[in-house]
Amino acid sequence: MALTKEAVLAQANAASKNTLMETLEIEIIDFGDNFLTARMPVNSRVYQPDGVLHGGATAALAESVGSFASHIFTNIEEKFVRGIEITANHLKSVTEGYVYAKATFLHKGRTTQLLDIRITDEQDNLVSICRLSTISLPRKK
Image (cartoon, rainbow, N blue to C red; front, side, top):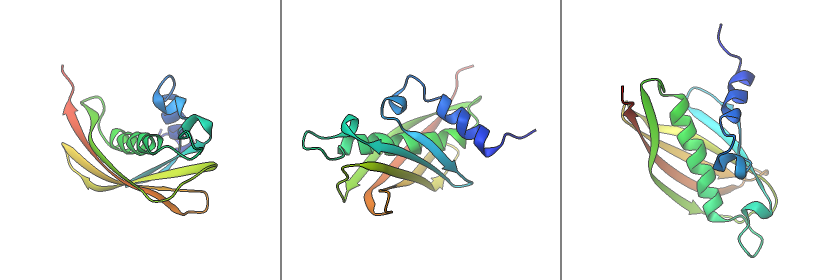
């Protein structure tokens, strides 16, 4: 019997316990055949000293959602996923609410993956555009 979408999301979020994703309160909220979406609250935990969303927190959100997308579309019994490069262009400041990261595959190869990650605010304004390269490597037997 296949798991429901809600069950998969619950398992994914449970896997974030005791990780940076839990520290930043990143929650996976949706996925489909070619994407994964997560959200992160914007509060003092992720501020720069002047009270706006820190670009490093945005990059951590992007890498988390992109790596997780590669992870769930990989046979994890045979392979493990690692991020190998991330770029981030920050376009808009955010001071409160949530930001949403949607990772979409540009390339889904057997060994390397390339994801486009768009970070938006609650009004769907573009906050950052990120690209993440991941690699799937064989587990040692």
